[in-house]
Length: 263
Image 1 (spheres, rainbow, N blue to C red):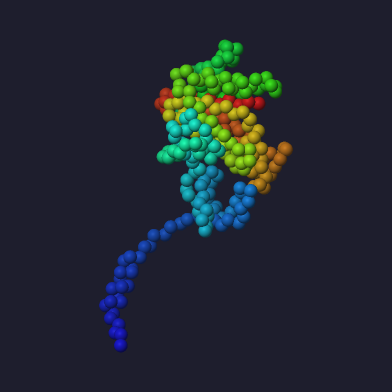
Image 2 (image 1 turned 90 degrees about the vertical axis):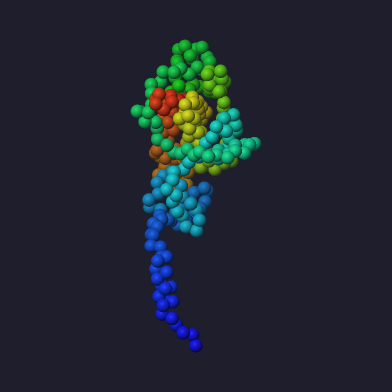
């Protein structure tokens, strides 16, 4: 016959009480209702913000971190795809930079006073362009807008800069989300070098491609369409993109990011 010892039972209960963890963890979760065309419809996640990361497992959980991209000096002189993966080379990244960022605050920016040499006498003499400026190249078809942009890139070599270029390639068969994020990826990587006291130059050949990708995303998200089915905030999309170009003050190293766009 098994005898029950009260002291052993009390010791076991006492140990369980001492080892009991009363920590309460509050997690904001959600449930995936539908996935298709690169869009996930989710129920829950009341406290998640735009551009915030979420983790897909059995339940959807917010990560309390914004969408960031890997950045490194290894990008210079390389070919990068839309997912910011280096082609034909393997590099381990340690730093991260936020993808969606607000424009440079006015108290961090400086006056545009340092010239950016285009290399064409007609432009450099009559329409001087400074580092940190946002410039629109406008003209009819077949008037040499791309030639001006290409000449500007080639002329930066030997201008007291390294002259390294980063080539971003994007597939035409990629989904709308990658097309939408491509310009944001380029802007964020250039902003990283700007805060590293570098002078960067971005040339947007055609912003309408991103607008079309954003229109497709908005239609899949069932947002209210406007003229030609574009959402109402499509103009804010491009202004937010271009306003990140600036000339930093001396306290931040006087780096700059110049943005050209063709029309």
